[in-house]
Amino acid sequence: MSNIKKAFENGKAFIAFITCGDPDLETTKKAVIEMANNGADLIELGIPFSDPTAEGPVIQGANLRALTGGVTTDKIFDMVRDLRNEVSIPMVFMTYANVVYSYDADVFIKTCSEIGIDGLILPDLPFEEKEEFDDICHKYGVDLVSLIAPTSENRIAMIAKEAEGFIYVVSSLGVTGTRTEITTDLGSIVKAIRENTDVPCAIGFGISTPEQAKKMADVSDGAIVGSAIIKIIEKYGRECPKYVGEYVKSMKEAMA
Image (cartoon, rainbow, N blue to C red):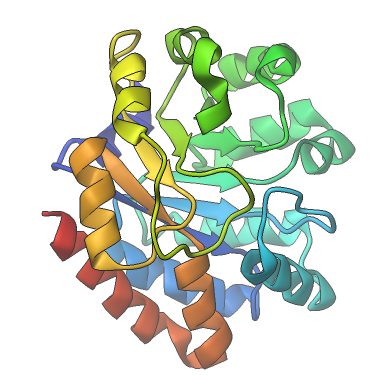
C-alpha cells in the first residue's frame, strides 16, 4: 500500500509545502518537525531549481535564496535522512524533471526510496512523457504524483486511472501564489476524478486562509498550501519554525 494514503486516513489531509534550504537546511528541518507536530498530514519538500516555471514570485524567491545559500540535492538527501528519525508522516519531493535528469533518474529515485521519500511531484512533466520516470518509480516503490489542472478536461479520466499516491488538483491557471478567491469549478473536476479512481485528491495553488482551506477540503480530500508558508519563512527567517507550526495548526483545525 502506498504510504501516502496514510495522510488521508484521519479525515481531510493538510499538505504543507516548503522550499528546502530557505533560509538554510537547519531551519527547513526545524520547520518540517513543527509542521508535523502541529497536524500536517503530508509534507512536500521542494528541491530548488534555477528556473521553476510553475512557481510565482514567492516560491521563486525561496528557490533563489536556497540556491544562493549553497543548497544541493545531496545536502537535501542528508537532511531527509536526519528528519526521518523524528518525522513519520509521508513526505514527497516536489521539483523539476531537469533536477532528476541531471542527477541521474535511477540514482535519484532509488535514493528517495532509501531515505524514506514516498513520492515525487514533477510539475513540468507532461502526462504523455511520464513513462520513463514511472518505470523507475515502480521499481523502487516511489509514487509519481499526477497533477490535474482546469485545462485537463478530457484527459482527467485518463490521468486519474493511472494516478498513484494522491492527485494534485491545480485550483487555477497560472503560477503558484496566494489568491483572494478561487473561481474554478473544482467540484466537477473532483467528480470526474472520483468516477475513475479511489486515489485521494487534494487541491493546491492559491490557498492561504483557514476559510479557503476548509472550502477546498469540503470539495476534495485535502488542501495543499505553499506560498503562504514561504511568506512566513521569508518574514521570520531562522525564527520561523514556531510561526510555521502555529499557522499549520490553524489551517488543520479549520479543516476538521
